[in-house]
Image (cartoon, rainbow, N blue to C red; front, side, top):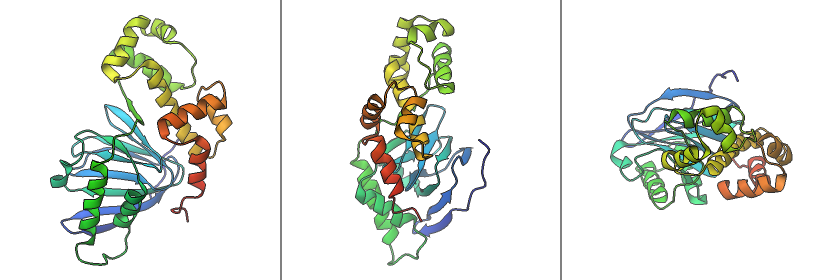
Length: 264
């Protein structure tokens, strides 16, 4: 998909040089790989975003926020018309958060605080944004990391398998069939999935399919059509898998998109 021009994010600066920003981005917009000296939280108040590093891809619908520590090269891709909220975390506060890119659940309180910090309205009282940023850090520190994390392998045989599935997530091949293409046994590949990626082949492929499902649902595809496009044999099994990974049903996710208070 061709890149679209980005509407400028509205910058706002709080105390201690804490820039933040908000802006609407079109479906399919991408930000090329880059790094930051400070940490960065990116939240899609409406729409969905994917953050990719050399290690993995993290997907965040409107009930998730992505965290990228200082120095990690990463890129972003946005699905659906996205109300993108960017919040820079000063280096001195980054030690409160994980040392690796992560995805966190967004509580109602955290959502409202992120929206307030990234709003371009003047600071109502001196130090207000600093205090709100402290709330963001506290909320994230008490929130477990979520499972919308898709690690990528270093082993060439395993990468052959994952590349095939990236190209066609709905591909019904078994691990043994994929192994014949990659030149490795099913047992070897199964072991590599666990040792390199920390999960089973089935779990990895499920999360890959959920990543694609989120993009389809955000673009307006029906639940049934999304299930078929992403490799599920029936909508009910897709709904169960989606609910297990995302924490809500596909229908509820689409309803939240339609009813998002961020939408103009």
